[in-house]
Length: 90
Image (cartoon, rainbow, N blue to C red):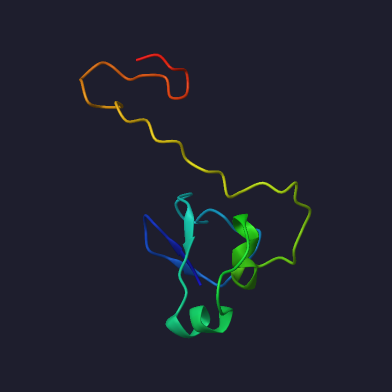
């Protein structure tokens, strides 16, 4: 089911419906525990690990997703000073 995050209206699942017809707010997907259980385990990389829950068959991909994060140790340690991560400067 799709639910409006503003006015709480509900809509049946529809792969092309993204906003509420009544108020224009974004819709979110809400799954029952049974629907989640049917999806099985989430393996792989990127958005396609959730393929069992997506309303489309696997499409074209360029191998995107799974981007790692770099630690930026000093970030936020002093107000107004945010180093550029990976630049070697602080």
